Image (cartoon, rainbow, N blue to C red; front, side, top):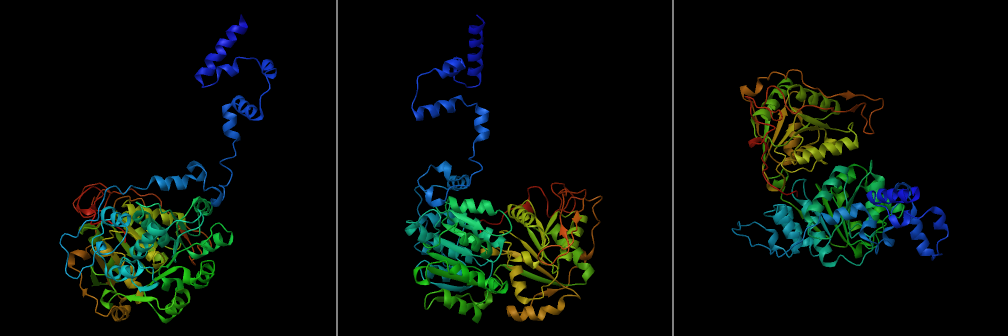
Length: 560
């Protein structure tokens, strides 16, 4: 009686928790006397008898490294890696889309529809990213690159050169990108900084959304295991900084023997930062130059750069340069205010609170000065972040992502981060300190008015920095527009009552960039009692509000 009652109770419990009532109702002694089964059936039976919680905890799957890419080619998608599955889910279908004709073409303008690019690329560029007409470097370089010819291009940041090499590479990939194993990339882009590599990879994801291209960003300082897993899961395009890529090549994580396209971006920066020996080591792993296309882009095509190009490219590569008047991108409204050092903060606060500022990037020459200005902006209710060599890599990437998404509106930076910031819709760039090198002025103001948009570049000629203006004017080939600031700009506002100021944590030794401290911005409420620049609080000052309105509208789409 008790045995029958126990059996019924046991079956009820098993039913509730998803158990097998047939397997649990028999006593253990009867299971031992059951009819012998085959080895495969015995394994299944044992698996059924194993308690569910124990089975879950004892599985080694999450601890084991993924199988090499060449062995995973025929395995189910779920076993290749969550990263690859995620990348595939993000793709879109082309559908019945046809390339639209240009409705009212401008005289002398060049349009992407003029080139025989694959529909998958054109739809992503024209529809998803909002590309209209080609910039000068795009109009010059695309006809050459899509033929598979080697090319050295002289182009400043913000001129759309990234779209040139990505669209050209993607066109070749769509037409002839097969015949490789998972760990054999089709193309490689080398970049001097982590931030630039990450941005190029994002642009590649956007332009390849209608293709099967899988992009992996490879850079040092973080995420080694994750990057290794991504590479093993399958990669068609690798965007890398040299040091980390050499590590993966030496450990045979990837096989570059089938590489078809090599792109070297900002070659002049590579030379300045001492990366050329690393680039030479990487090229030694690649197919001979006769068996690949090589594209090189640089802000300057000095003799040193051209000597390198001759080693890495086939004979007689195309050499393309934009016209000298495009040293500073068209669309940048430049203003230099002649003022004293103590007046600069009042001027910048006035502009931030009275002009239509979507995103603002403020440059200073020294890391300690970046920290000081970041502190002062917070003091006056301006929510800002700072980027310098003293900020940890994880923190820098988070700040850049917030800046890109619009969560952060103002960033104070040194030139360390200047070239790494590839963010659209930066409406204002401020040279709080004029740079010591004339070339850096061009790179700084090139953060705004990118790819045909409009932007404003404001510089201050004070008693400490005005001496560099003649050198900048000689470099850009014209005089800088200089004026006196209006009187209303010079009236300092009242500081915010009880602002949450950034925390500053100092460490002995500092960073590998020679700094002496590590800074953490801490939390700060994007608002204040005075309104104005605050996040969502109304006020009499208007301007850069945290609510929807003219201060936050987007002026265009697309990251070129």
